[in-house]
Amino acid sequence: MSMRAMQLTAPGTLELRTVPIPELGPDDLLLRVGAAGICHSDSFVLGLPYPMGDRPLTLGHEIAGTIETVGTAVADRVVGERGIVYLCWSCGVCRECLGGNENVCLAAGRTAMPPCPGLGPDGGMAEYVRIPARSFVPIGDLDFAAAAPLADAALTPMHAIRGAMDQLRPGGTAVAIGIGGLGHVAVQLLKALTEATVLAVDVDPDKLALATACGADHTLLAGEGAAAAILDRTDGRGAEAVFDFVGSDATARLAVETVAPNGAYRMVGLAGGVPGIDSGPAGGPGLPWGATVRKSYGGTRTDLIDVVALAATGAVRAEIERFDLADARTAFDRLDSGTIRGRAVLIP
Image 1 (cartoon, one colour):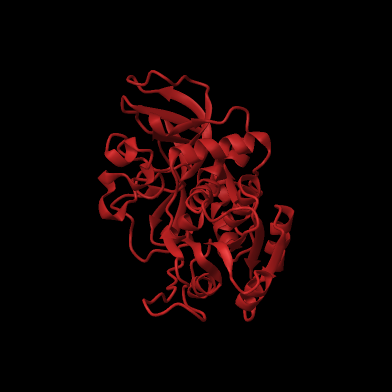
Image 2 (spheres, rainbow, N blue to C red):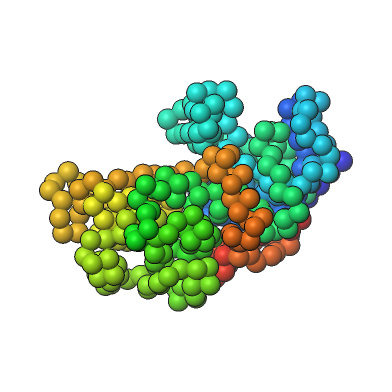
């Protein structure tokens, strides 16, 4: 039996290929893919100048679908269940996993990045995908295309926000930098989970309009004067929490210049930015006393379960643009040019 899969066959080369349907191990599920989101991480992998391995790789780590086949050792899942795939394929038995921190599984070593579909194991830009049974999270009757981005575009900001909840008290300010796939969901999560004032920052007026539609209290064009404007809105003190979903030099500097004393700066975007933190006396544009900086990766299985529950109530919704699986290259090009509103989703 064969299926269609969108595969990375060489650096920068995407091909829609016919490949065998994956064979299951005893602890696996075979998922008939209903939708697969496209993330900047996928674009990053596509742009690498070297191969990801010694064979073509099926991309895609935001996956929703229906269980087609159940492994012989799986007792708690049944054919026909609809669900989403938790992207951190951790060991499940180390002290971090047992403590609920599957995204920093000990088996992943110092890199703390457990295997992830489409970034090692074959992913979900295909008609079928093999997944560990413990990675399956039920979604009820949520639409597959709306649910798939929750696997990262909602999971990742949920984890970053939960890591800063002590700072997000009523009367405080939260800044979301970059209103793309993750950022527009982050605005909704901040409104659903906190009573902080939410300020969205982006270089694109259309993205700021999306932020307003998602509930942002204020919006601000990035660029010269943005830091001063944020400080002015916060009486010169800065924002209690700054979430950077871009991660460039410019956005990292903006975060350091605008986070409040004892505030939280959460680095989420992967653009390689250097915030320029030093150990000198706090003041001026430097990191203020007491502020914390955390590189936040992915999220926990509990985070995913909770964002699915929020989506089921309508409190969180990913803005999506649908593309046929065969049109993946067009979707990637649109993503790279910054013209996707929210999240691009492939439909097999």
